[in-house]
Image (tube, rainbow, N blue to C red; front, side, top):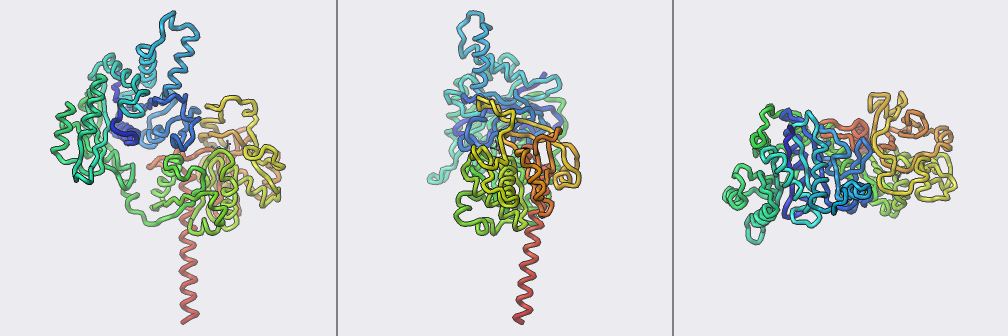
Length: 552
Ligand code: GLN
């Protein structure tokens, strides 16, 4: 029978519940247990796919073609737990299902209410991720205890523990223990208040994870334990990590959280913790031999979480090359004003990530032109591939005003156009070409070389594609189609054979990268950027020494 861990949060949002849940999942998995991860989000959108990245950060896409919360990205980077549609529910999705049942008359004349109907539906959602071989299900509740929209979830997990037996469930509550500069003290009151709130709902936390900027002194830990009715050893400090999020699991191990969970849930089948590769990965990260700077020209560059998986994938690739990857976020509108040469002067590679609508497009195209003409390594993702195609069509093929019909419906040369399957799509939510699709790679290309395989499966999230009408013209001018859908009708990857490293893909490879298994395309992009940097340095040194010779 599967055991359940419920992770809730108190005091403030953005405490890193997702990272902590992912870290717990990772530790249990590395103790030989089979884990499943799930996130329940109390907002009314059916999924985060219709929300702007400014609002909710990145939309994380699963193989099965679901738009999900970015915390699922943490789950996949930290664990090997398979994820499907049942791993992310929102209030919108839950109500959608309830209302459908009500319309079908499935409630047999009853008044449909939050308790028991919504809570029953939530409990059913939790049970859906249980499978015969699963040892532990970790369910993270979005938001903060006390939020009005979160109430049914807290009530549902309280009932769930009653149904499943308290000894089969563990409540982990994350709180903030702030340091007040003026008082020169750590404050435990917000944690006490948040636990009180949880207990008023009928949930007694078993473990408190206390996020803190500074070390929490022993008397404060004892105070928290006493007031919260939690054992002292179950009050776990989780200090802010300045270096990397991948340190979180190690700090939880130091505080013996894995042992505590194994003991409290009676997971006798757990094996000793195996975490050496993770430690080795962090050591490599801590001691880089090089540094590379990647110019990142995207629409949402000001929002830290909008390209979460891309930033993580760049870091993973840096680890392979013993390199610290610095990301220089460049506003594409500003780039147009100051010129690509100035904006990209100090970078070793250019990345243009995914995105929607017209804003900033011309700046991205200009940045790509600069990379193509100067031999600067370039990696385009989704919209990045579409912009690279437009740039090539305009400036190499000579199709003035080539564009995507996403940006100009009447473009004289629509080199990027709507996918045929999208033509009659009416609703925006969940209707893009979404999820994992196969791609056939062409032998002898950089993409094929990176992957080391002829056929790969990658995740997609788009409505537009390279227009097949222009394929011959583009190819004749030197653009290589290095990957297509198995039937050859969709362009999945392009590259320039004459360029040191110019590769763009229609998929989102960032969703497949892990800190211990960097994605091959990110790996080779950073490799090329590093070569570019070292080559530049050599040239600089060469020209300096030549100066010395002439003046001497
Ligand atoms: N807007 C483009 C499309 O819909 C690119 C999408 C993306 O980058 N995810 O095809």
